[in-house]
Each structure stands twice: as structure tokens, then as C-alpha cells.
Length: 97
Image (cartoon, rainbow, N blue to C red; front, side, top):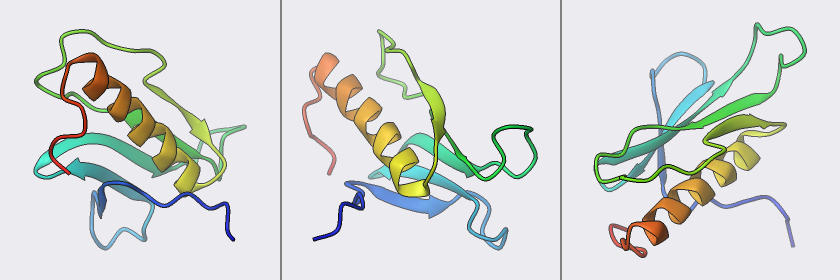
């Protein structure tokens, strides 16, 4: 059995045609995060930057809301985990999926 993470939400290319290096996560129509392959930063090149994006119903923020992971799947896991925590904190549970 593989240990590779399987996303809970839908992920779409942020800029289609750019080589599968930038993706945005969606819960229905609500965007909640982004992952990007770093190809320029010294010391981070080849790693995946993850960050939570603005969600309108969030009143209280959680940190960290961004970071770096070695693979796209692990970056995806971090964004989705962050989003799940926000939903739990704000009483949203697992709605929208």
C-alpha cells in the first residue's frame, strides 16, 4: 500500500498550460489554498511552496499558513489540513465536500 497522500478536495491548475507547477485547491467553488513548484529560490528550488488563501468566512486565523514540502502531494496535505482545521474552528465541519 502506498503512503502517497490522496487529496480530499479538487485541485486545478492555477495557470493551465504552464507545465503543472501551480495548483489551486477548491471546496466546491471556494478556493482555499495554493501549491507552487519553486524553480528559482536559492535553497528551496525543486520544493513545493504551500499557502492558505483568503476564505471569506474565516474570523480567526491559524499559523503556520504557509511553508515548504518536498513533494506536491505533501504540500497538498498541508493546505488541506490547514483548511480542515479552519472549518472545524469556525463550525463548518466537513460541509461543502
